[in-house]
Length: 614
Image (cartoon, rainbow, N blue to C red; front, side):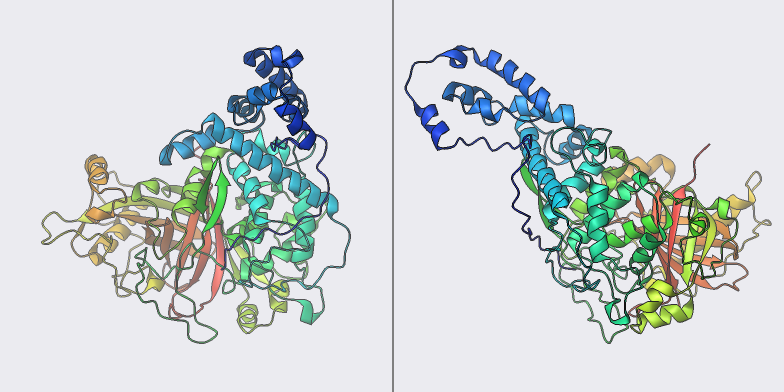
């Protein structure tokens, strides 16, 4: 998907009286006054610290820099201009915005933000929020054009009919993943004084023009776009879902992103690639309409951030769409929303509805630290270094509960064949499931000859089996005979599944817990220099029966691969691929293991939340 950032024009409205604009360049008359050699009088006689105190009160009253005061004379301008007194504007920023997340995240790459950095970010946010507020005011009822006219990957002409720029939405997205209570107040009603915008209303109007509900004429029904502006808009809307309710029309409009797996980006790099970055190695090209593109894409955006330009990848649109589709507040007046998000005439296979754990957005900055670092480190699968193994250790262990969703097979076939109606009208089922996962750090055995592999696990099997060989021995769901005394049946089952994985990894062994810290320290920045890898093994159950799940983590971006195998095998095998988002949401897709990996297989979604320890 193209990620070029193009700023669309916005309506030319004058800024509001208190727009917090930090452009303090004086006009011609004021400039002449500043250059005037007349003797100092009035304010010019005050000491700079007194002027700063006066300016602080003025800013506190209006939440705007004292622009009029700055233009009175050169002495005042020299004492209160952002370049001369950044601490004044940094204090304004701290009073109105959260700063803890920026301190944590910038400390890892350079240093904590300075007063000049905070003043620069104040300027960025003031201008961005003011533009968005003008855009919201400029919205007028218009006939909605054809949904998806741009199509996925159809350039980044950023919705000129809506006047939304990805630059401005980046500001809001970063504000939300830095939120600890202050930032969100400037994005939802009731709005405070100063720069603020009702993002719920703005994005609802934007989506009304870019998304379809499936009820248009056949030729007007298509795939909604997948541009940077769409990804950011969907994520912002998910973060603010608690401030609204889900409607049937909203759910219908999200279905393409949820069910058209072949049409939208699902991973930060193709799931069939284990060794990343690829470093320009040859990747096979797609052959025919049903084959996948296995070439990593450049997803870099350059965004102003606390006085510097950073490179960052946009979050994946499909993830936010799935979170909104399966979570968020439900409309109490809509009977269908109380059971499952589908059209009333469709049959939905759901048992034990009350066991389904609905995801909820979390507006607390610390839970988004790992997501921010991933977006910064995984911008390009060809050359981006990616994240380290230590970033993911401990993220997957524990008990998870949620659902997996399967579209009617004929509807899925119709979607692949280009019949868009099936996206909006095809029946689907949703089943609750529970997982219990265990992480295991493994390494090459110390007796293994030769240097340790830098690329982690020596997997040569098909990716539809997470790289493990298809001829692995059968697992046992009842290994009671070999169970050590005091070991629970559940632990014995997971032990047996892990032993089966190790049998397929010739020359690998489990790292004892007492040696984990030393091994990670010796492994360097990414932990792979010593051949370290993270296995994930577990078991679970759904209405289809009991199963084991076994796989591993792609260190580059934290992609989890799990093969789900039912016992006694009547339900087959399924490959799950997904990410942990916001610390406790596991989101991704499953697919069949029979379709060769270069081709689109029968796919569905899954979403789980970490079960509370209580």
